[in-house]
Amino acid sequence: MGSIEANGKSYETDEEGYLADLNSWDKDVAEVMANLDDCELTDNHWEVINFLREYYEEYQIAPAVRVLTKAIGKKLGKDKGNSKYLYELFPYGPAKQACKYAGLPKPTGCV
Amino acid sequence: MSEIKKFMYVNRKAPYGTIYAWEALEVVLIGAAFEQDVSLAFMDDGVYQLIKGQDTTGIGMKNFSPTYSALGDYEITKIYVEKESLEERGLTLDDLQHLVWEDEDEDWAEKDSIRLVSRSELADVLATQDVLFNF
Image (tube, rainbow over all chains, first blue to last red):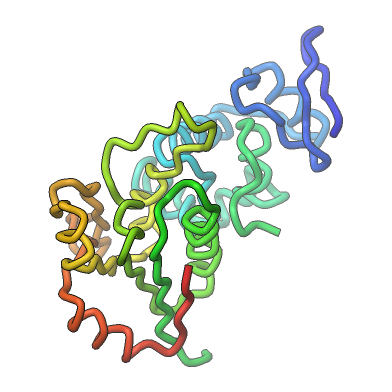
């Protein structure tokens, strides 16, 4: 267990830096997590992060990368629903990295 | 490319009280990444896993029933439910969640995932599998 500080607030995380409590998430902690990875969150990043939060809300799981790619393609268009686009935004792996910033657990089956 | 095998996950237990149902679901989701021909079967008390309107607030377990709706996204399109198991429990197909998958080749047309089969039909489907996982 660890913790992360954002805007004077402390957020509990697991040993891999994922938020321990999904409900403690807010935009500040997402920004701080991204900055720790030298990543600046743009609107394009937020589109994916918000999508993941909605997906989790509906299905109670974080989707596998293949599922995420397809679903993004359906929702935001083919130019965004491909691994090249998503890996450019999230070079550590779109499912893994974006789920972390979205405050979700690590995707099931993700190593 | 290696040969595609037919994998079937057989669910026989009620959703809560044991960890089998949730573990099965996790294994299914992980296994889906291997692009095999995956199907699920629900029989005995396993049919309760698909009941709609589940509420786990009283038992302190996560309600994972919404996750069954994600199976279509994982290209799992064949969910067999045994007719006799439903009948023995006074249930019908209407008591279960409506699970669908979207056919990308037909402009995301929604298609039913659940196939109601008799005990003997299910036995035939089981016999054609390469790999069976029992939960």
